Image (cartoon, rainbow, N blue to C red):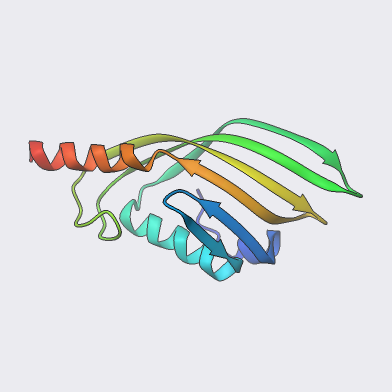
Length: 127
């Protein structure tokens, strides 16, 4: 929520891999950063709340963490979802992380992208 993109370089492995919705595969810190900047470009007021966090593992073997989160934002910027619609979006997402040596190495993230599209389409019908 603080938009501290420098933290990605500190906490994510250079070989980080993220597999997410719509068959997206993000490789490395640069692609992850680009994805997040594009998302914030479409939803400049976006915020994420961690609803639940669970992890297991140890320092020697690494950790696996599961996070349920909620994303909220207003579609006021251009991007993958088209021209700004003014739609207010609130969706739930789930992420599973593999963490080793204090860095995120692999991530599986799913979120309800169809709900984002539905809300944008509904807002356009109303407007």
